[in-house]
Length: 185
Image (cartoon, rainbow, N blue to C red; front, side, top):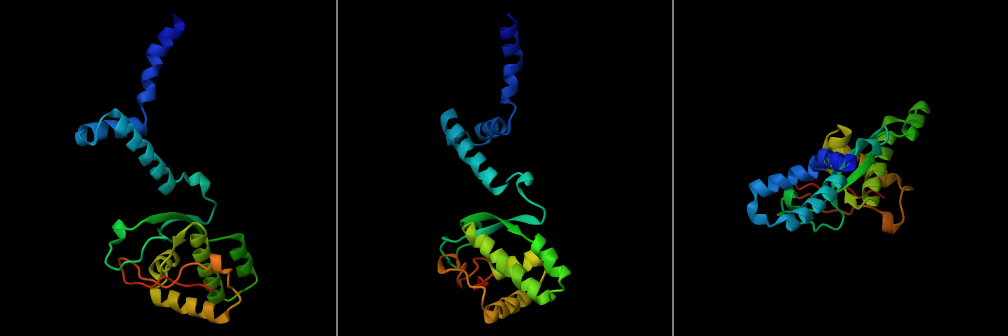
């Protein structure tokens, strides 16, 4: 008797979830989508997408940030709006212990900035993402011209070439801004 009472009393609480709320919303707002089975499949895929694009903050370390890069395999078409382009969520390290050590060793600011740009581009590419000059300018609170100048200096000093399969983004066009993707060697 007690188990039946508990089941009757508490089972409805299972329906209080994000998935249930999306199900009701789809049912009410988009009845043409299909029956409960189709909605359940949609919700499952949608939830996975949410988890991928909005990971829990506990997965991030101090100094890291979530950024939406363009997927490295996305076709680069200047006429395609960014909103219709395949994106890739990436976690980027804006600050590491190595940055603190470089600061304590009085490494010049321009060198620290160049090293940071190289790290961000490599981290994004390792996660199948590509950063543009505009992305880097926004992330670093610098203007695009400064970012481009630091990339040229980084490329000129050499010695930072990753293997070809890890080289990172090639030149291309940013869908929304006509901006070149940086190539960091």
